[in-house]
Amino acid sequence: MTSESPGRVVLLTASHRVAPGLLSWPAWQALRGADRVLCPDEHHPQLPYLREAGVTVEHLRPTAEELVEACAGDRTVLLLPSGEGDRALTDGLARLAGSGRLTMPDLELLPGSYDLPGARLLDLVQIMDRIRRECPWSSRQTHRGLAKYAIEEAYELVEAIEDGDRRELREELGDVLLQVVFHARIAEEDPEEPFSVDDVAGTLVEKLILRHPHVFGDETAETPEDVRAHWLRTKAIEKQRESVTDGVPLGQPGLALATKLASRVRTAGLDVPLPKGEGIGYELLALAARAETEGVDPEAALRAAARAYRDAIRATEGVTA
Image (cartoon, one colour):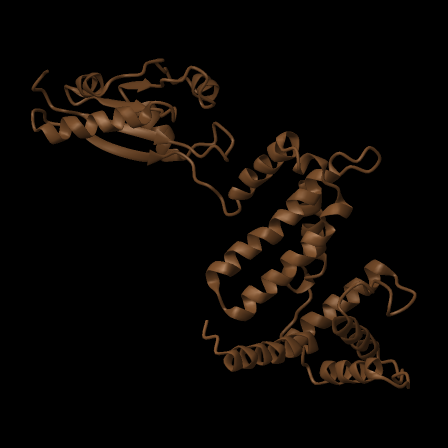
């Protein structure tokens, strides 16, 4: 081994979620300033772009000793990690440094590109695509067959929110997101009206921009009430409904349904008296309408009361956890 100045090793990493060639300016400076650029993988996705930029890359998988030797004489060697075999190289460098026999080159980890917010969603789409193709159960599922899971996951999410459990909240949000990605993947296979998760996201983006003119347009909104008014006006224009009841899903839980209808009536300024009738159903309808007027979610209020009742039952039974 030589005793010359030890030089520098630069490990250039890049996110696989960012298009190859879209490297940071410091990364391009390091590539052009290096004495040697090494890449163990001749199929590395960055290589065509480096060649186009005039960067000479050697296809070489050096050992730790070879890499240290290549840096001698104050030279800079930039390595494009391939993922496969990189652990052996870094372990070898660590062993050499620990031996005390050599003056090691400076080691720099240089991120060439960074994940943008939401980048892991790309991984999720890829994973879902593979599962749909290769899993015997998932490959046979339909929108209708999965519908019950969407309902279950939504309720579990609400429970996590009410419990205040951050770990559960994170997990249940993922389970709800899975339903969206799964249904979107199934929708790609429809022979007549296929659409993808990108189409779903694109539709949502357009809707959010349209319904927030105070953020993306010229309108102003100073209060939450102003925002709600914008939202309702925009929805009315979009949907062109014949009745305020149009678009209210009748399959939702009874209290939520009654509250939604009462909200539509109140927002539209209609004078529609509650139907008169005997029995608990009409009493619950009146309570739901009253809760909506007072700004109370009757579903949440009833769940809170039911949880208190559950705790009382468990206390009576002597159950502490």
